[in-house]
Image (cartoon, rainbow, N blue to C red; front, side, top):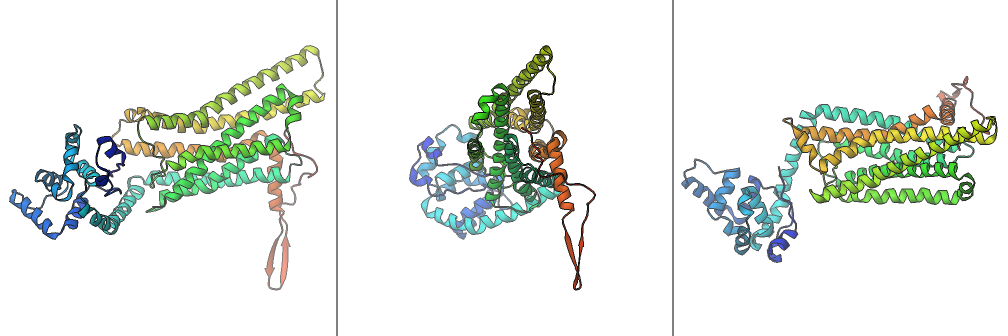
Length: 482
């Protein structure tokens, strides 16, 4: 059911009076219930008059819906409740014949409602219409969530629950490993921890809210949706900007090692991390502002040019430009490392000196970061591709089934879950590609297993130690990636 959502800009466009346009400013459903509200505001006598008129017109019963709307306008009923000058002004424009009766009634009620009726409608809307909408939304919510969309709901809830468990455990292990088992964390470790913190926001806040929105029968709290979008896009910004900084850092370390070592101070590192988080928060604010839909937490931007502009700018800032810079940076790093290797072969130097060891270590770190970037691209490309097609109207032309709206819902949630999966996959990548993180994860698990559990049996207590056969690595040996 389409709601009437017009603004004060309408009366500016059509030159309508400010007094008549400000009488009613809330949304109205142009249904039979809306007509009944108008009739009730005028009085029961007028309801009887309409009943009598419709009966005399040859109808067996009172007209409803579209027919009642048409009859009311045809018989001039609007003159009792609408400001006549405002109504005549609207009819002068060519778009009026193209509007159906629901749209006409909705437009007139917002702009041309007579003052002696508007205050009564306000009271009735608050008490009757709002209550009816609540009941109607509850019924529709049950039908949508537990009816035709039941397989989609089960899939979303299951996938989100798995991502929550994997993401919380994995990202927590990353933070514990760097904080407890790495004696001297490097710049890369600091930014990987920053990404892990942002991923935890998705795992602990965004995905649980997504599950709640799919399972809740009714949800009228827009703040939940805004919270979800805030942390979701903040995490996206933090991930992409942190990876961008790491790629630039690796390039400078390999291209200008001595100069870079002099400027890489702890103070500058903290400032860069803070700047990344502030920038990520700033990029998420527009998404919070345009969060208008309560049912699916959708970001509602005015259709047309504004929507295309919004998606284009967001895609460039949060995806395309950083990815292109990182691909160029890692390509340059690969060229530099290849040149170093060829130089060593030509000079016949042994691969035992410190410089060669450093080059080997740099190559290992670069492989890890490139793999993280590849997974990021795989997870987020469907998301941006979907919204690009949607903003430019291509998606509507490609959906040819009998249920295009349902297909849109499936695609929207699918790309959202795939994008959120990136937050849970990063720790798995670290475990497979970094020997230091594998040792750290193993040390964390051993520490958990060796934790002493005390069981009180009557007045006695027994201490049990498990997993003692696994040796804990020496804490004095740093697990370091330069």
